[in-house]
Image 1 (cartoon, rainbow, N blue to C red):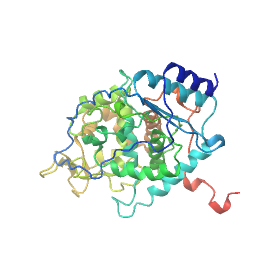
Image 2 (tube, rainbow, N blue to C red):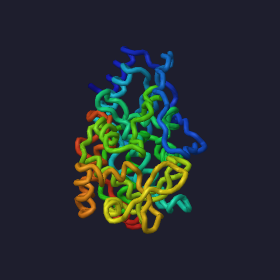
Image 3 (cartoon, rainbow, N blue to C red):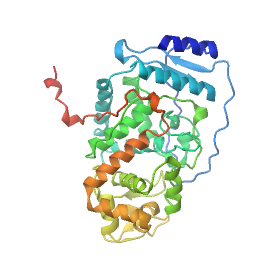
Image 4 (cartoon, rainbow, N blue to C red):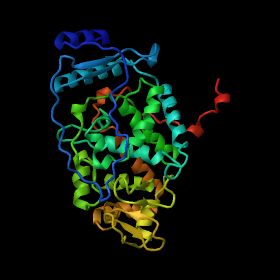
Length: 383
């Protein structure tokens, strides 16, 4: 079936008005909401939105040639099926930008990662990885909802969930990239940002492929689907098993805490996990076993600090990796072998970033490996 024929059949089956092309809706908080006592999960799932005669938005064709992309926005479960079918048809007919186009987006993101000035430890990498992680980690395999496909953190109440505090920084940063490359979906943009963050901060290659589509506010996920740092092993398994991960993958993904730091005005916790919070290493695991960890004496939520310098922190969900027998086995292995962790981390992150995306939507059957900036020819060397 041709793409035009599919569009015609959609119009016959469900009257959808075409609208002028424009930017996708944004509903971002301008101020980071303080959470001094830690993350709270009390937001109820969003109520279903009322049906409207204007049930969708068709973004016009973009640049001519392979860079052109058509975007459809529909409301309602039946229309979501149609929307997924449209994306699948685009993938089947190669109606999509090329890998080179996505590499340009990657390069622009990499420029921003290194241009953070005084923000945190001088890099936007950790907060961009957190954006990709949190927009993907809402997946529920039983209901097949959540995940990276619809980029619903653009909407309230999901954007205001306690676990997402501070991610307005990353979303607003990525909006600059979106303005330069309006053809890319938010889901693809955010997950590609996570790939760029990991790779440009010295981490392993993360296989990635495009194909995510942008959803609507009614598809925003309920609060409580992301890990609560104050909990223990049972909670971690509940959260990650819901996504389809096993114990080894839980531990591998936890190693992302080698990067960044907790913020008092966001999660309620405070401090970095490692001495090199802008470099991907297995130091998170090494420090878990090599340092003596004690409860931090302060008025904030319960967290650990290293006894020696009192400058590092671990969350209860981090420390449990040394206490649970199954988790400990994998954490110890990663502490002793960074190459092993890199391999398992790469595989788990690639899976994480694809959660909730129908396979037929992807534009390639095999994920791509995006080149690091320093692996590419300098601009003057390019022909």
